[in-house]
Image 1 (tube, rainbow, N blue to C red):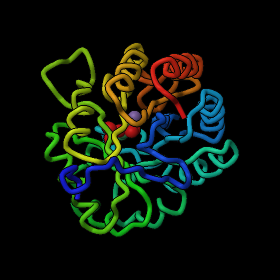
Image 2: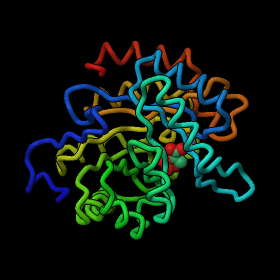
Image 3: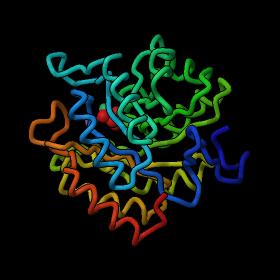
Image 4: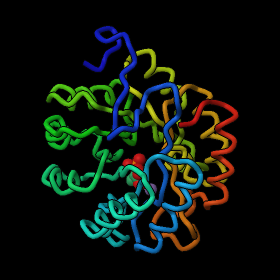
Length: 263
Ligand code: PEP
Ligand code: MN
């Protein structure tokens, strides 16, 4: 189902009226984690002003250490919905457990499957039965074939509304958090009809590299970007080092318009 051989035309995923995979670049932006209503509102106003269509923010955080901030759970989901509605944005947020399908679906427009859950097959099967689109991130060390097979799990269940997201893979390089594999954009375009977006925030782990890699991703032909933006990155509860300030996000959005049509 995922293969271009069986479906030559590009798929356009309609997320409550916002089309991902069309001629225009779609931008999802917001903080790594939902921390408070004030933080989220400030971030949402900034990403809306910059021209994003989606507000991102994690309410269930898959943190490496159990002692790190784990997210606000349903309270965070409610804030996402409320603030996104205030600003006229769609909501994309991560689901980490198949039992949360209804809970997350109640507030989100687009389910996000994180890198750590790319091969959580029970979750993928549950999402195959959902009637909302899914954004599937590439696993921490997943090959393109493994990633496309994960998408196949969702599609095989009957949900063909899948957006792929390249977010960097683990290599021997340590300067960056991950190695952003922009060649995956071209590979996915060859192998599949599904839209692909790029996450230069997790892909590099360094805010200084987010703008150049976002521009490169768009030049490579991706369908959209997901970018971490925090009103005060220095006090972020997660991923501050890779979060853009509103000012830098705005600058990036202006630059993107020179490379491709932005929605
Ligand atoms: C995130 O988007 O905040 C996140 C946890 O991303 P990933 O699953 O790519 O690490
Ligand atoms: Mn993050």
